[in-house]
Amino acid sequence: MNASLNPQSIIDRSIGFIKLDDATYEEVERDTNATTEAGVIVALTAVAGAIGAIDDGGGAVIGAIILAFVSWFVVSYVLFMVGTRLTASTTTEADLGQLLRIVGYTSVLGVLSIIGIAGDGAAAIAGLVGLWGIVMLVKGIKHALEMSTGRAIATGLVALVVIILISIVIGAIFGGGGAMM
Image 1 (cartoon, helix red, strand yellow):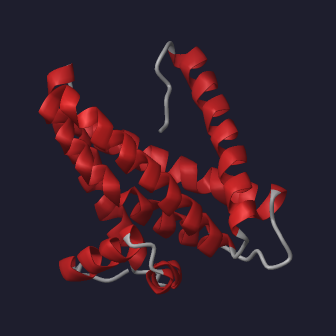
Image 2 (cartoon, rainbow, N blue to C red; image 1 turned 90 degrees about the vertical axis):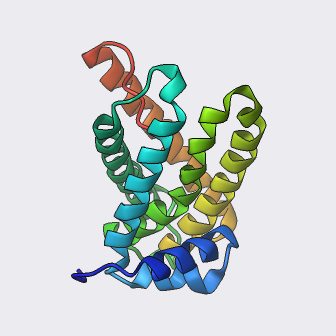
Image 3 (spheres, rainbow, N blue to C red; image 1 turned 45 degrees about the horizontal axis):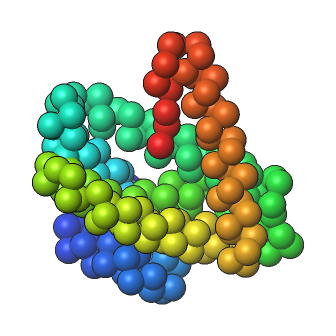
């Protein structure tokens, strides 16, 4: 991993992800140093979400960051397992690091969750941001697992079911909110 992060690289790559630029998705997929960058994005989105939820009694920024990192790993791992075992095509080729990088970068729109402090007016914006995030994730799955868009959508849907089941089990074990997403 690189010793120093380049904020401009993170910004440029984040913009490339938002613009659905194929070259940027491929670059991040291949660049092992981008795993650290993706981790920075995950942390920033967690902090933004904690700030955005401050009116809801939020404030546990450290807890939000820990949950964000656990969720990042679990979502990436489930996508990796589903995509390489259940929905793989003949061209599917991936490792967990590729999924970590892609999923981390596709969470970049989460920094906009800070708009939660704006109150009820932010709900429509959050919905649109969420939809675009889904589009970014499907594109990321497609690139990371070298598969068609249809297969990427199927992979995402199967992974979603698995993650919901994991959340239900965790909630049953620990009592209540075991949500990972």
